[in-house]
Image (tube, rainbow over all chains, first blue to last red):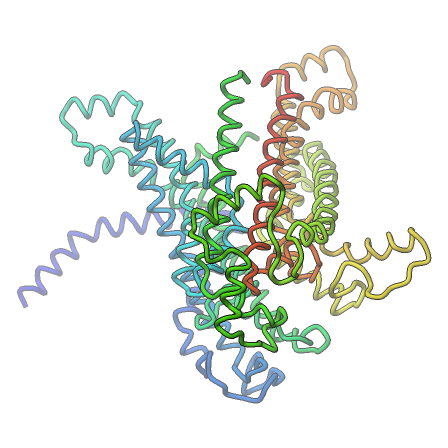
Length: 305
Length: 327
């Protein structure tokens, strides 16, 4: 009873904050262009598909539930693959894998890289040099050929794929977060705050993070679509996790089927994951561009024209 | 650009190159399995012949894989300096030979795609900037930007499904018709072009938007500059102002970008070649990974990485030569 009361009081106290956040969110979304709104709806649909995969599909994705290469019909809305597994369930569960890999890579690389960048920018000196030289080298490395070889050596495991992708995508957020931190650090109000006895932690939390986070958020959307793209590419080459069937793995299995192009099977085996991937990537791009425009007007001005 | 900056660029180039060489050397040696477990089989992993322990040891010794790591590295560097990339285990011939066999195909599609995407991108960019903020400009912007978000190999897959599988207009695989007898050089060229068409189209489309946006945006920025107003005030016509004053300056960044485009396409070609089963070094790399052909993987990675780095370096140099403000 008592605990419940406290939580109610807390909820009431939190309400204005939540209201505030919700208002900000609706304000942000209302500034979206038509494309951005379409993108948002598309992503929402795919996320729902991933969450409610068990409800949306009649069969588990890895179970043989029909004949080999059945035509789409009432039993199997999109038919079956060569092993007799339902393709519609594979699409639903594949959304989970693709989204999970994309988001995991983006969050680790975006937040981790951002933190490193802020640290480098704030501390300066040797730490800064060390981080920035590493960033330089990573950005100069040809990512995709190296991705192929490293993931081949690490073995096909979903966490290895995530690790490799993080390795190649933290550099950009780090560089941008550092540049932002340096600009902010040069302001007179930071010096003033320091003179009033502000601790580094306070400065980062109150002055630097609020400026850097929106930019990082835009970058995270970008990295998500890069990671999904790269994972699809690796999986397509046969370097994905065979136990975690993403949309890219579906493409791999379909295109590895020897006579896929000489039979009508590609129409329901190859096209669904292809369309799903393109829709997801387009939606992410639309949302990313609108967020960039709304959250960070400075970026728009710097773009020229 | 003064002497110090030039040194920094070259220093960075050398460091990056060393990192690549080191990764190149270390990674394949840490991969699970060894080349001899699949050595006797073909690429698809069929017909595996199990070797005896003695045979395995013999081959380990023969290829120097039983030496300590640092000795392997030193001999690797020494061989590299001599241009010797080792023996391919899968093809049983020198890696340089395997690469030279497949590199021309990759260069063919990458360079054609670079030329096509640059020319088309510039033309579209000029049209777009000319009609700035009109319907055609907006339509082109939205369309091309959306297009650019589709990764090149998915685009390739779509083109393959439409033109090769459904319409049967183009071949499904290969760079030339197998066992073809050619009546003449022209016939050969036609066959090569016919096979390269879709891969080149895919790669060109992948890079088109970047060039287009760059041309359009630089042209628009340049057209607001004072010297353009001066040129107009002198009474020069639209055409001369645009071609002599605006476009010449707007093309500078495009030229620089071309170098990067070649580099990016070299990387992207790996996947696109796999989609079209086009026998360039990308497809060879994929097969080499499957067969765990260490020397071949190393060689291909080195060639791709060095060509990307060199393209970027050359792009920087060209920019300095063209733009007197930078030099």
